[in-house]
Amino acid sequence: GWEGDLKWFLVQDVAIVGGRLQQKIPHNFFLATKQQYSDFELTLEFRLQGQGTNAGIQLRSRRIPDHHEMIGYQADLGQSYWGALYDESRRNKVLAKPAEADVKKAVKPGEWNDYEIRAEGRRVVLKINGVQMVDYTEADAAIPQFGRIGLQVHGGGKAESSYKDLTVEALP
Image (cartoon, rainbow, N blue to C red; front, top):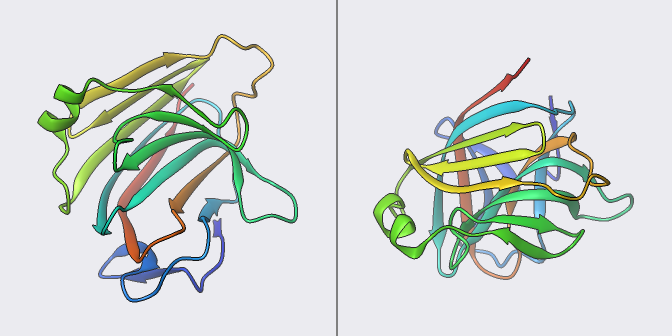
């Protein structure tokens, strides 16, 4: 039920691993579901390794035709974006960002962390290790509230973004 460039994604020790610690990643890569989702709750564990690692989980997104990018919401990870909601390749901006104190309380850099993403109606709530990072409601009625889920490894460095124990539950 997933598709993407398998040169940059592999399964290792029961986790999906994007990127390489020994090789610079030329640009962003996404491993995406073939199925589209509207209202859902996604839970997973993530771990980032490498210097300056940045990654994210696409939601309600789609592939850009004949391009490596996805367009849509991204539950962000890494650097100064921990727990932020970013609008990837559409508005190209952070839509909501957590308080720095919440990030410091929740995130365990270099270790496995829990991520909970709940998308219901026009609302998206992100939690890392049980701490709420953002609660965002989309004001623009023209923005689609359905699409694919994608796992990102960010281009530019030698890094690995790992994901495991993914569960998607469709909401009524």
